[in-house]
Length: 106
Image (tube, rainbow, N blue to C red):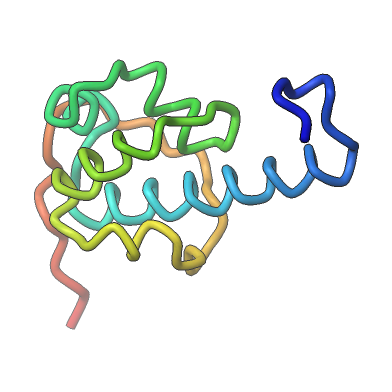
């Protein structure tokens, strides 16, 4: 059993990347759905903004205990973080706490 990323097979490394990307995209989707900035999620969850960015883009792993912190801020069950996002992550910078919820056009 490999203990370090460089000791893993390419297939295992690819599976880990896919899983990180899936969870990260879902976190991003839930965060944006609540009008939360990355900075606000970071402050409320106790993680750094850079860590949130890395998680959302599937570039960084996170201790599973921290997933509960993120879920608490997003006001969802931990299982919600493992559901595939409705759409892939897209770059849409926003800096400023919680966004005002937009009303659909009538």
